[in-house]
Length: 455
Image (tube, one colour):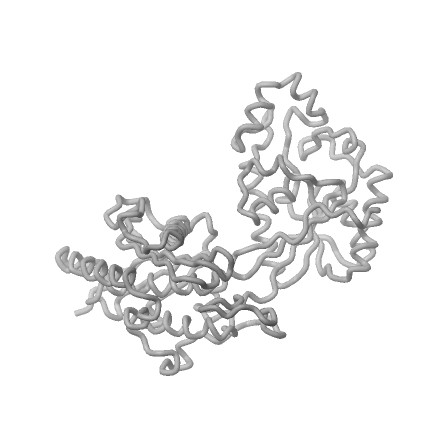
């Protein structure tokens, strides 16, 4: 008799070069306690991010099945990944166009009955366990070896880590402790075999049909919309192993325009969201008009979103008037609240609040004097706004009219750079930066601090 059981699988994969040296990691978790039940990771040679992510999914589902071999159709697996591409394709909402993805999706779909597996996209920050395993695998491959469980800082017998946020599990619970222990032993044996096997032997390990033998229905193909046009692969791109370009579709392209000058800008005074909300100066209005001319000539901007502060709304209005577009306001794009420092120069803040300024420069968790916002708080707010905008404008080019800190934060997050990088970026008034966000959650910075349109 099958015993119902629900587990969570968190999986990830990465490539240092895309394509480049790649690896994956996956962890099976008890949703009631947060305890890791099994881990698996593997260096897979040269591959793309998407191939590595699919390999991580396949390994995670295989490990979950091996843990509870007697559960049969009663096993329920909730997959959590930060790859939007894999989650949407395996959920059947995005069509699988890339020829290298179809056999991997088929392998994943054949491991468990489709009704037994659900998928959830999570931010990368919530997928740290699997991400760490994938990086450990890539590190091992760099050193000429393979990942070993003992190398991980969260081994199979790690303590509980808190409840995982998943849908409520079915009423029946696990089988006898002895049966579960036997399942764990089998899972460990399977995972050890996976780590020790060469990449071509993976098909034997996963015990799924070859792609030609998998029914077409096993590969999710239904889709609400899909990007039309040619393959994203560049002509003559290398085809080493799985080293082909990922099927990401058109990105959400965020064109980041800093507002034009105000009276405070040339004096380099702190001007955030807690001050006087100044208007554009005559110079700033001229900058906004030249930016509008630039975007009209470019012809790429499809939507406009602005900070609620006056200087941004005025800049956005100038562009919108030329392009015939409306302006949407997003509170998340406002500038940092600099508290008691509003309107002061850096030298004045150093003189009046020296200790507070030193602490602020040293830690993103420290707020300006008088109840301002820390950079950590601003990052959380801006990241939430980014996620809303990327979801709303997927596949489109949207102009974000905002401020120094939000733009630097969006660039920093796209690069995966540390908080202190905010102090190492130049960002002029009315400058343009561009970040593209892809369907798998990755991003690329295409432009930073361009002011050529103002000359």
